[in-house]
Image (cartoon, rainbow, N blue to C red):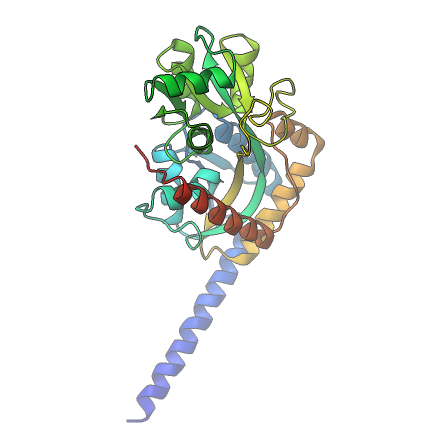
Length: 328
């Protein structure tokens, strides 16, 4: 009778050994088995999409394997992030994650299916970027204070668009309301491209957008940039003042972009991805393109990126709680 527990322990050890061996073999074989899919949780045309396609192209060349981009927009990035959280942790499904999917939404949308801190393996932080407050070319607002005054005089009648619920663009607007007392109404879209098209078309009077996406429309005169959301001016729009310079004290919101794999992806695969992407960003042409996107990159390991994300989650949890922010 005593032999059975011993047999069970023996089988358990064998099972763990077999599982470890299989995981090691999968890591050794990666990425030869099949193409890699990089999920971008927003519609085509926005900053995440542009950056994701740049990284995918370069990563494919670096790994000698096809890297496909799949746009899976909706719910402020939640749908795409959730799909990757549930994907097989074999290194063949990655996520272009953002401040929205992994710092804001966990507090703003507590009912989401994934756990941002536990269901992903952070690979590398690609960089941060400023947002900008835009108004349509035919709108009467010439400054941030014009928008503030209108929002106070006519509460909830002025709308601002964003790339979706829980995105940094959305939270830029919420922080704007919180710090200025202006009563604006949020209109979420399924990505940056449709939001800015409605801004140009006059369906909405204002929008918060990433500086990169906004730049060509500002340059063509289709929209006006009133202020950037970061504490310092961005190289993308050096002539546009910061919110603080425009009279909104304490305003400092920067978006960020990153690469994630599903939790339990072999550490060797995560480490190889980190090193491969870091080498890609170090290439002068890629680095130049990323700076053109307005991204500020600092080299980081998976562990350093994990610590950064933990801090960001705590920061936005406090902002959302203090402002009693809720999705509409």
